[in-house]
Length: 130
Image (cartoon, rainbow, N blue to C red; front, side, top):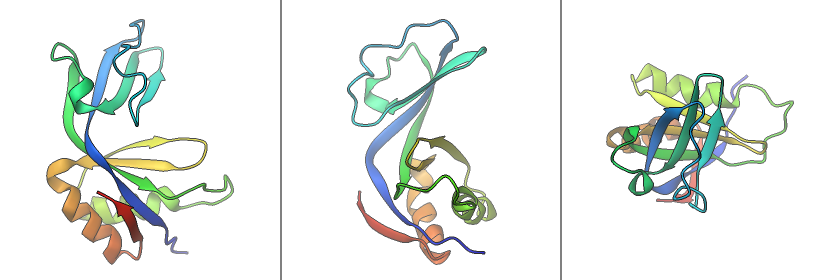
């Protein structure tokens, strides 16, 4: 079964930051329009606006965020796969963040336009955003 879903592109450039597992969450990140913090036994991983990342941090910079329009019911299956597959077929790498309501797919800024076209060709519908 094919899942068709609306999506938008969140404005701005984002970074994926890796800090030591016991590092404090940088205060500059709190209050950003979009940020995600995940702490595991191995690392502290943060997605946040690129300009808010201090130069000394280990970071993968230059990402754009595609937001799947939610909320998505927990019982719904295949949504993330329906976004990932057309991008994988074009060799577009992704980084994902999931929340209670929806999924966010990060793609390199240099491939964002190509990613959007691929998602539209796969039947997804773009609604606003940058």
